Length: 425
Ligand SMILES: Cc1cc2nc3c(=O)[nH]c(=O)nc-3n(C[C@H](O)[C@H](O)[C@H](O)COP(=O)(O)OP(=O)(O)OC[C@H]3O[C@@H](n4cnc5c(N)ncnc54)[C@H](O)[C@@H]3O)c2cc1C
Figure (cartoon, rainbow, N blue to C red):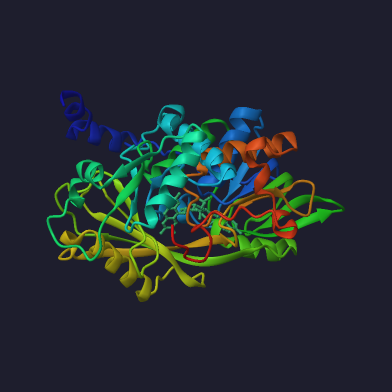
């Protein structure tokens, strides 16, 4: 306390003001766009920033630029509901997301930035006798892969999540749950800021207000990108533009199996601590929804996509209503709370719900996309793997299944419930 009060004293503020040094140092400096780079990364969301960071850190590629048409963190990386977990059913997915979760566990230290990782547990509720064996199957698959998963019956669940104890009448029974204890939440924009600062320290140029509008090519290679600030030569180009991937496909002249859909989130007025875990549920008659309580006390709610392609970032009423109804059916005690805000982001939905990390059309053009509504939790693994692919020219084993050609060959990674269609559990 003593140190803090000395640090923020009126005198130190005045001295900082008078010296012109400023009190806060910017996390990343406003770099000037150079004429040429070894790698140009398009999009300063989580995936673009993490890719740039690993290109510089792991592979010693120093001439890297991240070009962002708006601001660092303006996209989905700063709009999501902050949930991280690795409890996917398919091996291709659960090993990848487990790599990401392990990296999240040490990311604060690695970036020397407090990302507020909170392993509060992610609890998938079984709301009927039929749901329970489905969750048990997922849990078994995870445990066989060495990933933590605990199946809880109702009594154990009510101990773990007292808010679910049946003080009030619920419309349907809660039978049990599958819990991943290491899952939880991570402060979303801290991830963007932490990667941006660490990448800058390694010499990466982060250029905001710089939209990539075209690609110059010769034969099988891209040579430069056209931007709103001029042309930039590039040894390789990585597109990590999330909800704008369809436009990238248009730019490349490649039809991509991706649709842009809106995903909403909302937050209630703050209340006293009630829920110290993340709940995920598919209430009868509703799409999947999830809830956690923020450090400020607000209940953060999310659900399924709105269901029609859009770039508007204005969520539709029907989905908001669906999420609220489902939530009140699971936690009736929240029925009197008022919603404070809701917002939306544009998600790059693949038709099988799994991502694409691949070389596209040209030898030196890479696509990092298709994160649907689960890409925040993937960022550390995606950045490391994508950087390795670009630097070494071949995809690491972890992401081999995420190639684009799977949509032509039929080797889809159809993770139940993660694509554009609401599938139960
Ligand atoms: C409401 C909501 C809740 C979510 N909840 C979760 C969750 O709890 N857990 C989870 O794992 N995932 C969640 N997600 C999904 C997750 O946020 C995204 O999958 C992930 O953030 C996408 O990757 P990104 O961070 O790189 O994207 P973004 O942050 O969207 O970055 C892409 C960037 O590219 C820029 N760009 C686009 N086109 C161009 C161009 N031509 N030139 C230059 N720049 C360009 C954009 O401005 C943007 O900044 C949620 C998403 C939303 C919207």
